[in-house]
Amino acid sequence: MPELSKGAHKIYGEAAFEVLAKAQELERKGKHIIHFEIGEPDMETPKNIAEAGIKAILNKKTHYTPSVGILELRKAVQDEVEKTRGYRPDLEQIVITPGLKPGIFFSMLATVNPGDEVIYQDPGYPTYGSVSSFLGAKGVLIPLLEENEFRMNPDDVKKRITKKTKLIIVNSPQNPTGSVMTKKELDEIAMLAEEHDIFVVSDEIYSKMTYESKHFSATAIDEAKERTVLLDGFSKYFAMTGWRLGFMVAPKKMAQRLQDFLVSAVSCTAAFTQWAGVEALTGDQSFISEMMKRFKEKRDRIVNGLNIIPGFSCLSPRGAFYAFPNIKKTGMNSQECADHLLYNADVATLPGTAFGPFGEGYIRFSYANTLKNIDVAIEKIKESF
Image (cartoon, rainbow, N blue to C red; front, top):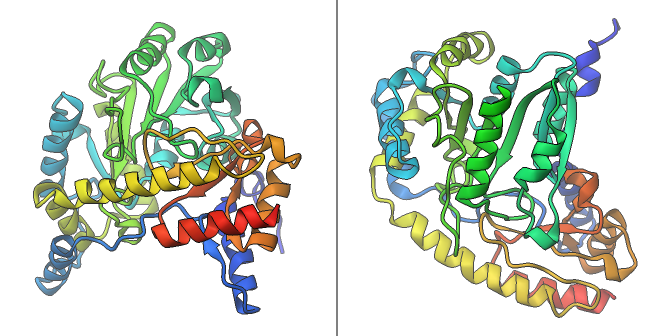
């Protein structure tokens, strides 16, 4: 066959799905695996949201929509951003996407050229590095240090800005560490971007999933009008991972180009999914507080459990649903430890290096599981050493 493009060889996937495949192979052989590798809530989509989607299908909301999304959902996003970020974007800034990942991809396509530098967190969400590689850009890694509760340090960002820096990507609450940046830190990142004429993409997919900390946005200073882009979606805090629904708030000139990206790539987001999104943002919100109450209990259970395992130590995450224990005192590296847990304790996790080189010495647990399974997993891990 003809040669594939250079870009096709530069893009890469996620380790979570590779580990899932290994775990499922063990299950086919009769093993009972406890899954902590996949990052999705263990609850179902709230009934009112599901019913809104079904009603939309029955009402023939199954045709093309405007590529940027239906007006009703864009207005709901407008109200949501005003309520949660403190500013009201113009409708022309709001773009609906089939999940948050296209938002990452399209915002980077719109801002980054080959040879540019993209600053992002490490350990961090793999898509940032994958798309940077695909675009021929250089990824500049900001190490997230345990002594700083894995928060991105603006001073570290400042030291790495060069004339080639085009984009800074911020993710808070963060995957894989569960860290939550402070308002001061996020404001400093936004001001550095303004000073050096750099774009900021703020991935806020876990925005409603904080515990002791409050969520703030790096887009608040310029209200996503000049150089910042807000990315959020419905997958995590509405338990809608399979619905594929997200939104972007971007400067108007960028939003105009994003419209053509959507036309060329996906035409539009599914109509009935968007109507479910309207209900999600405007309907009963009690599901989120109940979910976070349950996640807090699971967080406390798994962190306490991990901290009694010899060789493990774990900070309590302030957001999302991930624990990121330090396993250096086990004498294993991240991959060795993750393999040990899978094959000797029947517990599927991800090595910290799945999220970048600075993840060495750590592993990630997605504690979207039952309290019983968390307890069983802790005991099986203890017994395996």
